[in-house]
Image 1 (cartoon, helix red, strand yellow):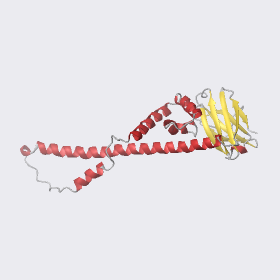
Image 2 (image 1 turned 90 degrees about the vertical axis):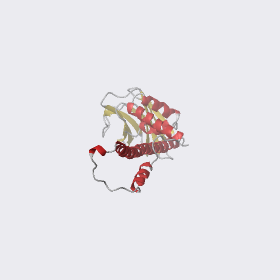
Image 3 (image 1 turned 120 degrees about the vertical axis):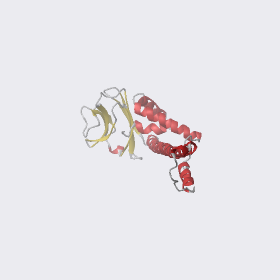
Image 4 (image 1 turned 60 degrees about the vertical axis):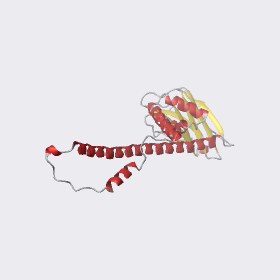
Length: 244
């Protein structure tokens, strides 16, 4: 995934986005099935965390069961009795014990998977919060300068740049995604030389991208490129935002 609107997923689930980001992500969800699935999954995890109750067995259940088995005196295997004297009750007991051990192992595995998903969700949320804090810091800087232009293909690109933060934010909101096999790509231009600021994924039409060193750029450009992006921009550019 490219570092654009997808990075808002954790913050969006936790309702930690501003109105601009929420609108951008709501629009993205209508276009991206993968993000809709991940959003549903993270909402489920968040609900479990809020509830504080797990349906999975506790993490040490399997270890406790195996420890009890290890500490139980075992009989030497008896000589095979005649077939007519085999005890169905004993066989059922052995089978039940095997089921208990298997269930304990399965329960521990389920817990481990769920626990990993929670940790992943927390990491995603933490990264999203850090990124949101960075975006807010730039947009709220006392010396922030904002420039915007229309895309030739329809939509708008807005650039906020702060000298004191030595960074900027590019916010792309296109009317629609490019044709299949094509993607939007962002560029910063310094001294006439373009440098990629990131390419969106196929089917994506919105992005919020933080760019370090933005005050040193004279322009920001947007192009439509073959997926997954190009080393140099295809001309003519879909939009050029003059920063100086």
